[in-house]
Length: 172
Image 1: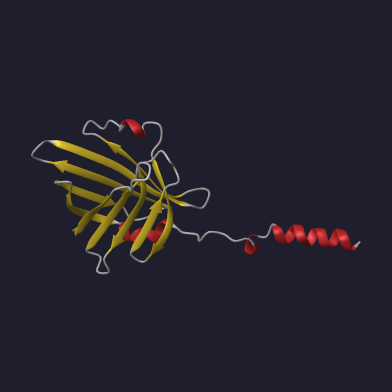
Image 2: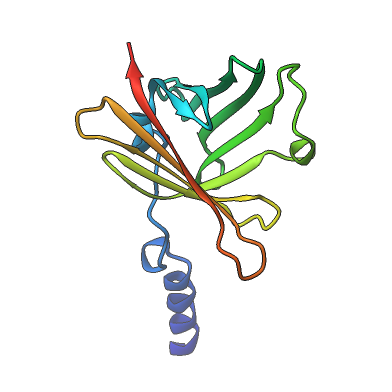
């Protein structure tokens, strides 16, 4: 009689979520500090990033990079949301001026998981080996008037990847 009872207790304990280690749970609201209208210079052009505040577990963002002298434009559509598996994910795609998708993003968007967050900083990483970008960090100053987006790419072979920063000021 003792063996079946011990077996039942072991099954119950092993299936109890409180006893199994889990990753820290994040919510879209944890990155609400990104919300706003941000503007700066990037790659010699004028860059803007606009993020809507969280509603219903999602944030929507848009990005525009324009080089007025050459008439070249680049756009991004970005989404941060709570996925069904409990992970907060950032997804985005690049578009040209005619709203054509970049060729490498036709099959799937860029996808990043939120892995670290505090009051003014969020780090997203990808595990997809096909993505050029490895990590994206959003960091806002304490006063809320400056946002830095750091983008780190994968390197080829043993070569380190490149990193660039977009430095934005809040537009009102």
